[in-house]
Amino acid sequence: MALLNLGSWNQLGAQVEMGIEVSAAKVVTINDQHEIGVDTSVAGNPIFGKFKGITLVHVFSRNQKGSRRDDGNPLIHALKGRRGFSITEFWKGRLMARARTILASIPNSLEGFDYCLPMPSSSPFCTQFAAEVSAVSGAPILDSSFLRKRTVGELLADIGANPPKVRESAKGAFKSQLHAWQRMDPAATYQAKDVEVALRQHFPPFVPDGDPPDVAGKRILVVDDVFATGTSLASVREIVQNQLGARVSAIFFLSGV
Image 1 (spheres, rainbow, N blue to C red):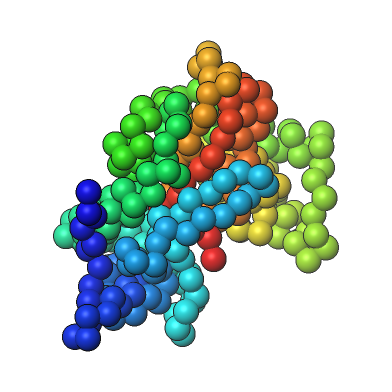
Image 2: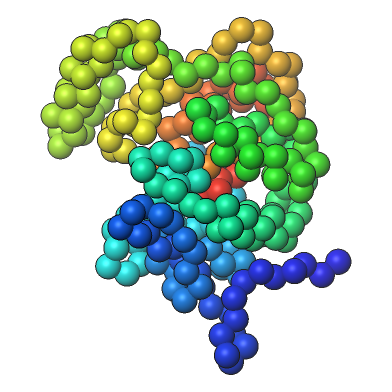
């Protein structure tokens, strides 16, 4: 079956790339004349990669092209409705239509999985994206409630018992982060978005909770919205693969840069 290509075409019949625009009011739209921030075209995606032995698929690719230095992340902020960014239903719908076309173009990369596991998130967007991946791959959604975000108190206790090796240039920021947590309620949930990207690798965010599913020998496709440092994925892999015996791959709505 031929796939509908939703990309834009110039007057010569050649497909052009598509990036994002961010207005002064933090409204994100798609621009069919460039690929600054994110390549949102069908022709230029997906891209593939590896992270610590985990196979990765990225539906759309972030970049730092042009003079703007926001690396495309305002798109995810807008889709998740945070930090003051927004996107209209029109542009979100158009972007999700392109995502479905891209997913349908890589059936071999999405077949053979037993479950799609959405990364636990306070935003519904990751679950929405996981539903799209599930529909194309045929793999049902695995409830992620057996994964719990760690508390600030748990992180501080773990760091006290097992101090990580921190680069000399990052030690000041690392100490500042610990001091900030020490002033917080120890029962507060860890939020990676509030931590400098360079420090996140030192704070595995998840622990198993409750009665975990029997996934030994299963193939699990972890679904997340954006690849930043890979810390969340590594934390999920530690639980789902190393502790529960499944095999993990991952798909992201946006790539790293």
